[in-house]
Amino acid sequence: MVNYKDLGLVNTREMFAKAIKGGYAIPAFNFNNMEQMQAIIQACVEAKSPVILQVSSGARKYANQTLLRYMAQGAVEYAKELGYAIPIVLHLDHGDTFELCKSCIEYGFSSVMIDGSAHSYEDNIALTKKVVDYAHQYDVTVEGELGVLAGVEDDVVAEKSNYTRPEEVEDFVKRTGVDSLAISIGTSHGANKFKPEQCTRDANGILVPPPLRFDILKEIEKRLPGFPIVLHGSSSVPQDLVKSINSHGGALKDAIGIPEDQLREASKSAVCKINIDSDGRLAMTAAIREVLQAEPAVFDPRKYLGPARDRLKELYIHKCKDVLGSAGKA
Ligand code: G3H
Ligand code: 13P
Ligand code: ZN
Picture: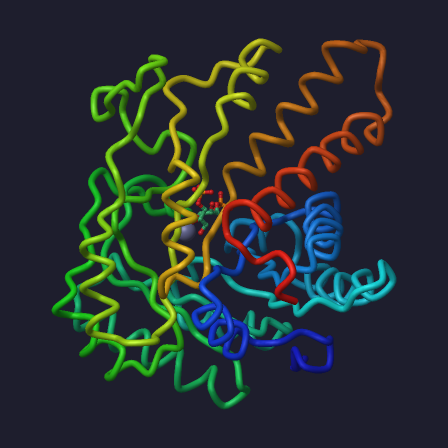
């Protein structure tokens, strides 16, 4: 058993309390390799932003549980070496079983998500409470989920979203003891969040997706004053990255995300954690495709992973400064 405190990590409790009070959201950036981790830490140190390093179960299998533990510890030391010890959380994204959450806690995670949203309401409560009871013994914080997001959640694919029912949130939080709650208000996972036919067009012909359900968010906030709310599926799918990928041999179709101004607005509310994975994948892919097309003779991975890391860093700084408002809050 490794305690996250010995690795220099923190849980989400104080981070979220400050974020709600300050009207900003903490970035939760997914990672599974060294370049992504370096970019996240470089960006958040430069922006002086607290950060959540987020690992899905697929990412954990990909990277290896033992390596991840040392990578997280390395991230803490790396931030100090770069000159600013930002608070860092290591968080399990979309944990689907008690055993996975327990194993992550044993390997140094400071926060876990138990996503029981595919289960019945009562089964979700029972599973979430079991994880909370275990995690809290080690001062590890737990995120639960009510409502279903459309799109791919790791191995779970939901065709249609089910918005969170505000009338359930108080009962769920009280009976499970969770520290934060992921809700469904119109975001979804992946780079294809909306079909073009669901969108309207602005004066420049740019597709505008349907707005997030801020009315549901407000109702939830009314019922759970000051309680930390989490938004998954919050990539904006920058169209310059999509264009670059497609003009360098890629084939992304109908890639549409959540407009950044809506995420900015959400960050000012009780939404204090915003999950971003797909935008990072797009930034990396665009940079790698650009290098490989411009320089076909390149075969040293550093020659394309280095620029990919730089592109990621630029994206993450932008998210902290201009979207989530977390810059300067560490
Ligand atoms: O919500 C899902 C995350 O984007 C993680 O995706 O399961 O492909 O690692 P992944
Ligand atoms: P995106 O696919 O919109 O980046 O969402 C990531 C996420 O919610 C991870 O849990
Ligand atoms: Zn998610």
